[in-house]
Image (cartoon, rainbow, N blue to C red; front, side, top):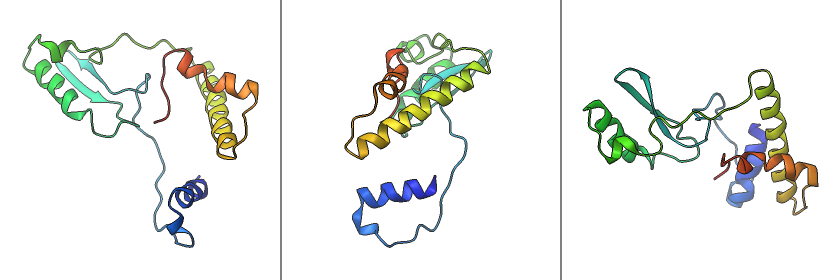
Length: 141
């Protein structure tokens, strides 16, 4: 995985050619089921915000306003925004969720690799890689 990221870096920043990557990180990431930031009530009166993956910290100010409203017991616009305690995203139970997610992820990787080689991805790859968007989950940047 690190080698793949290094190739991407050099492609985007040709001046890095021949440079050594000193550190690399990999591991779990914070992502919500919808891949969008959201605010959830984890216990009565206790809320948290998460799911910033791919969105940076840009939404943090708005989510903080919602958290403040909820902590103060306000029922204002910030406490009622769509990302506050949204309806749960229904996904299949395990192990089907893991298997399906793995198949979709591999299709997305194959599609992106083909596009980077200026090739058209196969029909099945395009179909499977497009499932998240068709069900309302937006992936990528």
